[in-house]
Length: 201
Image 1 (cartoon, rainbow, N blue to C red):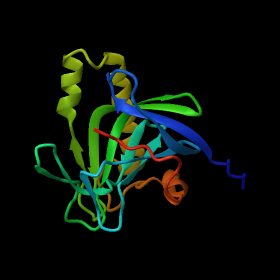
Image 2 (tube, helix red, strand yellow; image 1 turned 90 degrees about the horizontal axis):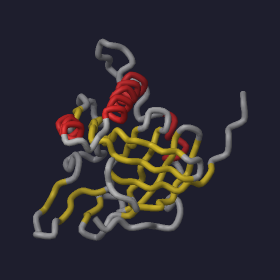
Image 3 (cartoon, one colour; image 1 turned 90 degrees about the vertical axis):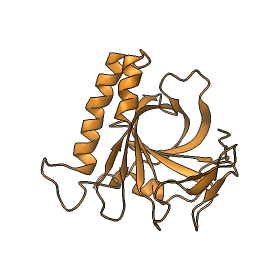
Image 4 (cartoon, one colour; image 1 turned 180 degrees about the vertical axis):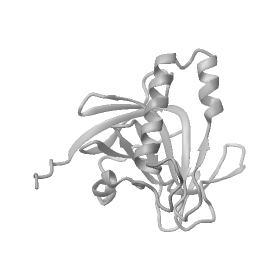
């Protein structure tokens, strides 16, 4: 058996594709092979789920360019005072929320830009739900998403689905590899991963 490579610190910047720089970051992160974990805190208008705090840990799979997280918040209050429910507000364990990303990996620095397409993967046996294909199409139509980035993103998205969610064409009773085994060691790390950075959006 080959020895495991040591984990190493990494700084992560995140935003949407086409957002002007500077993006949100640097966020403290840790790399373990092809997987990265990074964290940031949500502002007080977000109410954490029972047993959680406002520190959101996100995992980035660099081989397929996706980010995945179980949202730490139960509900949020908008500036107008409206209440917005979080993902799976009635579930003890929320669904995983997976985002297609455009990743620029410079070793100790990583830039992750959201490419619109998402999938929710529940933890209780419900089927996954694909989201925001219309936003992806709108971005192409509006010229905000170049064709080469869109083509690359779709190919990586299919690779993610085939590798981690459904390996075969026919539905199976269990996921192929979800949540990915590649994030197990990172998920076990204590928080915080570094100096806490708060998102002010």
